[in-house]
Length: 214
Ligand SMILES: [Zn+2]
Image (cartoon, rainbow, N blue to C red; front, side, top):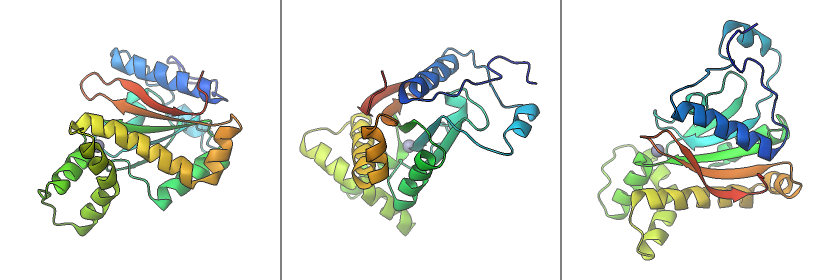
């Protein structure tokens, strides 16, 4: 058996417990005292037959947003879906529906962060300054453009303020398009939390909640 702290996880069974587990792990990371739980060979062997993650995370692909590190969790704890700027796509919704329906996660965390390159690129695009050769980069940016333009129309130009709006819009789109996720939230078995991550402090702060987490 693993000798380190938190070798065994009492799997959170409801949204409030799952959110608390995420906050506690992030707190250990922020203070520089991570436990690195459930990352050893014994634990790896113990999860071969089955996975029971306690949360799904949909976040930006930024290399500094490493999910298991910043929440101080281990193998089998998080079902992670990431792309640049955490933009909704049908495959993303399908992955999150799988986490909810098959893996029975009680929490979906949508995670943006400050100084996000995808948001920056979208702002540049609205100003005619996006220099990208890849046509699919333009496709990705186009999925954030409406949020950026609406923010700018309200006098909001700060990249980090726009990122928060984008997290909110992302959650609204997810909940609006997935009947399964919406029904699970209504039943109290699922919550979707939007949060922002501060690159310097490493701290995760909630910015938008759909469902009950307390
Ligand atoms: Zn980013």
